[in-house]
Image 1 (cartoon, helix red, strand yellow):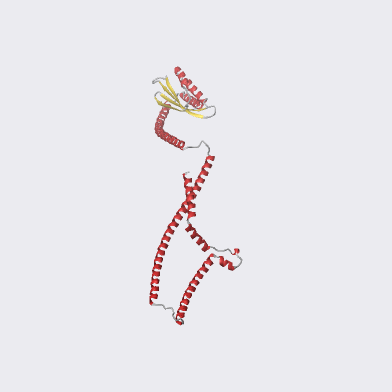
Image 2 (tube, rainbow, N blue to C red):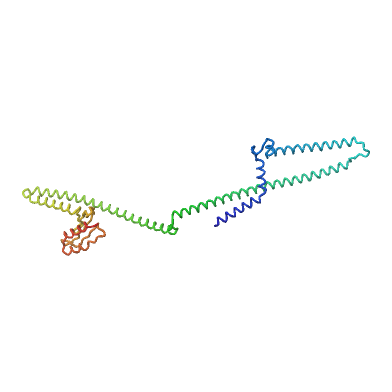
Length: 350
């Protein structure tokens, strides 16, 4: 509403300026009059064109004024000569005489008129200078007002275009639209979410670092176990070389190894690792009824220096409760039944 009031005020000021600024209108009319050209189709002959063309009329008027000034000067000279001749050759008894006092009076009047003419010229020069100064200021004000009016018109058009664009946006995006408060709230939520994700990423990086450390330790342990295995194999070879007559343990060893391989292939056992003297970790790759595989780890903790199972822990099946199965088999110390029950429930998961 404030912009519309300013636009209306600027338009009214321009209208008032155009209606009251007669001097600028006259200047524009003189310029238009001087540059106007008549169309030859509007008149019938060349003389009419010459008389109706403003530029030609101006030239004719200037030449006629010059001719009239010359004619006036010739007339004054001829009149003075005529009076002088008549004064000399007249036969009148009492001819009019021109005395010295008359000449002095005329000279005095001539001097006074010259002084007045000089003062009038000075006043005219001052007025012309003031007029030039005022006209330049008026022209600057006119240019400034004209620019302000054009700017106000441009701003009004921009306001109209912005309103039309806003209307189109409102039609394109109906309610409910996102407000400033909603956008700020969403921004705060996004900042908090980014902070949480950053913290989570740092935690994951820490876990990766820990896993790398564990992997390095496991690699060192595996190398140590390989060394121990080589030594055990050497000892076995030495013992086999010392016992040449008794070969009963070889078929038993082959049968046990084959049975263990069959058990592993049937149950999906991938790895067996003794974490400590009373802790054993079994890693299985279990296939469910849909054909998908999942890796789970079952940790068995025994009572020290005995074969009694103290507790068990299942990892890799978050959301599935195995506490009832574990408790039921712990009472009977049935390790095989507990493993079979856990694997059976794992195969039934969706």
